Length: 248
Length: 260
Image 1 (tube, rainbow over the protein chains, first blue to last red):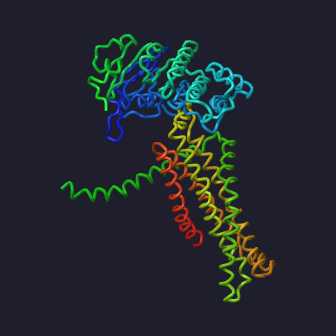
Image 2: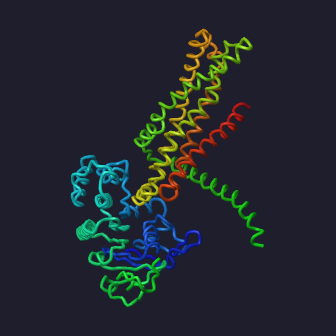
Image 3: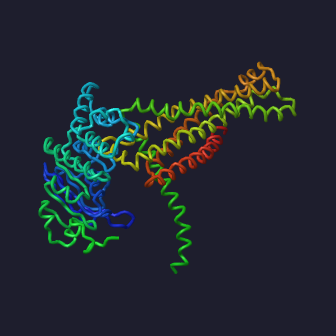
């Protein structure tokens, strides 16, 4: 279970997170929506432990990730999987090597076992046949799928997606959403998806939280969010130009 | 009042930001040395980086080393002839290369070839979240990215220095014997008489420290590169300029320590 408790963060005097409280239960999938620059990715980086908060804490299974050090932090991070916005594939490695990378670096599996696992994972994300290509030779959608395969190969209990469909056409975006949904159903991991894909995301998540000016202003099921009476949530979810959110 | 204080604030901010940056750089190096004390040592990565820093710089090193030796012999010969001391050409060329030019030229060339590429490579990894991905996979970016480069720098630079010295001495030989008609035996005999182990060790210490300096600054600048292509290009320029300046400054200090 993930518990974000009263989280604050500023950069050069600019307050990005202003008291975030959020709970994600085991096996649940949560979409994090909100305008650009309202702190979604920063919140995600706090959950992974890449950024330390100014105040507050992130509890993963009741362990404060901001206070963990050394082996304990490593053990906790080993349960994570992260799919970054651009995929963050290592550009000097092929797709196969990228997916095999965590296994090679963190396990003592033999090459043949690693190979089997990688081919299975690539088949799961429908990337068979692209093993020998470099990230620069594949499309944006393929990069996201390769990143998902690299993330899932270690069987994570918690997967964080940072805008997994950003920059993709609607069909590929839908395919990625379907893939995330299938993987979650089969592997039963907890997930947090930072996204702007509204309303597409509502069909694949259990809960939705909306961030606005560094705070969670609404949280509930996709239906509750879509029918919310809050003018900010209503304007954002329905993509209206008129309303309390100023569009610049 | 605010306007009166503004110039002083700007003036004061320059040394403060300089000291802050210096502190960050030293902390970065200290963290690297801390992690260097613990295994595992990624031997394959280290070999790959020796190839990147050392082997790929060799051609340029051979080229510059030979011409440095040739021009040194040419200039020195005309000066020595005035005193009738042209037999000292070999030792003068060799000592200049071993003590000063070898370590400095190899370090400057490695900065231009490998240091800049290293900064750009790590900088791109930073802005495309590849370093964050390593961290998120519970892999230590220092151990995976920085330390192999530091070790590769420490191993490569003395070897590159040796190449510059040897090629330079032969470059000087080609000019002295081929063009000026000196005796080959006199050239090499003088070298073995005048060059002491102390001189060779001095050059070795210099190139070892330059290996740390180049990889430290290049990795630091890449690791802390700003956003976008502009951030990476800025980091690369800073790495090359700072490394080159520090090589010359450090060379002076080390020379004054080694010669006293």
